[in-house]
Image (cartoon, rainbow, N blue to C red; front, side):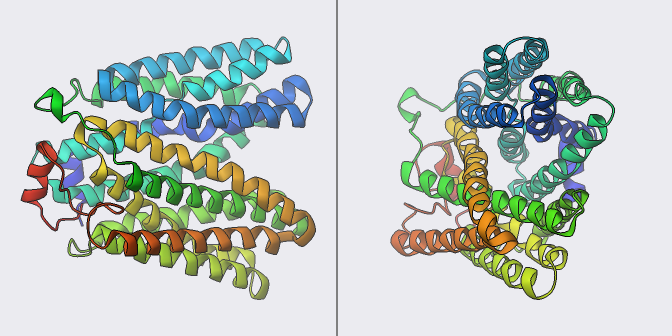
Length: 415
């Protein structure tokens, strides 16, 4: 267990400020929907603008990652926080006017979204390497997965409470979080300088095939989230208690957060390759339990069990992506991985929503089960095709330059 060591490495203030800094990401979508529905009195337009914002977030993430690799975490983190704050101000102003301006401002909010989650993982990687404590990376990634899950539980609940006060309140508080946490976090904790390769010839491209595998794997995880969100919403409607959807999905996030924290205890001999395939299988089993248990037992009970299989799978994807990325392209790789999540969620919601119309909760959960089966098939295919050649699944680092030196120091290491 390495969490106490993480406190010593990063400092105590890193954790509360870092958690608050990621909350705007978790509150943005729902805050936008609440604001725009109240401003336009149209759920359809609010949903369309929210979808545009989500797509813009997926597009803007890799753009922020590219700029971060080039100009450093601190400069880009501060610029993104300021740009996002101004974009929210523009959205508030536009909500008093025409729909075209509202739509553009909503997309701009997504495009400038600070990428705290993916970039802080890159920061952890460099932090533990700089202190020659790479064995702490597993605990760091476990913590980050738990923090992400808890932020997506706390964020929507927070928005719901604020919306009862005023439809403008969630947007205003999101802006306050950006100014009071995301901006200070970038100023205080982000890297001052960006590590550079030893020579211009060493600035390498990202390995496309392994990154494509990770992207598809994360998109599958997003689709599972979207399908489960739809399923719990249908469940709440069926029992006549709409508040149950938030409670059950919060249960899903809390269970995942606990499982993510437990990953810090995994032995270092449990390789990333084995973790990826094992946790893909566990995710499939979890969705199978959810599909069957929701029908035979209850949705809340089945969700509680299935939630334990989510975070370990995602942590393995983050760890493998950290391994495959050249040091000078790490931020881009991590933001590309994270961009797959909202795209997968949107697709999962769309497909599961159609099936739920005809088949209810079971129709939505069938999508989660099929997608989890696809994620397992992807993992097995990549494992078989790779044949331990570090081509499709990069478990050990065998590229040239600084990364190669790290590989020689940790030939069979895991984070």
